[in-house]
Length: 115
Image (cartoon, rainbow, N blue to C red; front, side):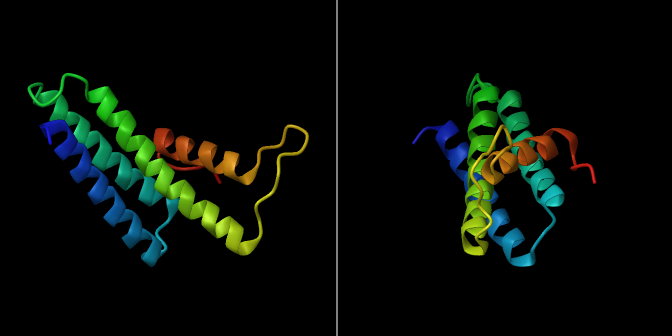
């Protein structure tokens, strides 16, 4: 295993553990996503400061972002299937899954979702 794989693997484990804890505690989405962002940004900063590990910190950021969003979305999808609220897209309206993708991206970029 090379260094970048170890860094990505460690960050994914941390994100996974955080996700499990936040699910149990029913943490607010904005809080959870901002915590994930801190982990991702911290990992990216480490890679940027240690170019011998990898010269592509943006790829590390994308991989971790995709992983974190995927486990969050999968949990949401399971909730939708359990509650029976998954709807198909009708006439240009977003499906709930599409909405959750948008919702996650928005919170990640802006810190919170407008109420």
